[in-house]
Length: 289
Image (cartoon, rainbow, N blue to C red; front, side, top):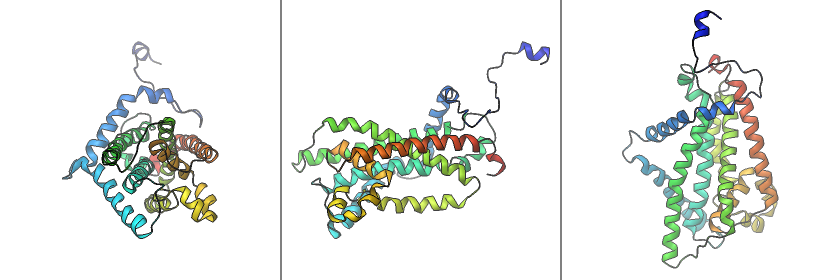
């Protein structure tokens, strides 16, 4: 080092990562201000040039609820565990939308942000984490809509709502869903740097996944009417999470803590594997993206 270099006080020293497990979470924490700037950018830019703007956060689940009500309740006659259909569907859709938005948005982290990654240094993990946080805010808007519908039915005498021990599961379920969306999302993001077909596959694959997840129906309905498909649906780690989410909010549902533990393990494994793969790919993705 030169004499001039010795006299300078560097505020940031960028060094190569030594191994696959060199995750540097402390460095991610130091860049938390940047994370919140990305969150602000995502929310402001998504509907910036639209007429209705943030109202799309409300319109989308409302129209989906109406379609579910007409198809699955009126035409198919699928029961909703004694809960008014709009409440049942809105609760399920809110939970599903949160996972799907986290998963789809983080699955394009490298390809969608290659321009930023190629110009300035910051911990790359900040980007998918900011997506998770921004989706929590959007999820909160849909929850407010859900509670507005619940209050309407409570005041009109069509539903009896109460808060009990089941509510304690709510933050836990949200964290697990976020971890699963982030884990699988960044795994796909790492693979799409070489295999762009995956981004197309994910778009309609998530839509198909919804039909083998108890979103428009309850797991209890499957157990009673189609028990031969029960294990297949429960092997989907999202099934227990959606059921547990409905149970935590509405106090109804077919909850099995063994399968819920299975979902938690899947989320933890996906998150750990995703961070490791992400950590490996970020070193050289600019050569292939």
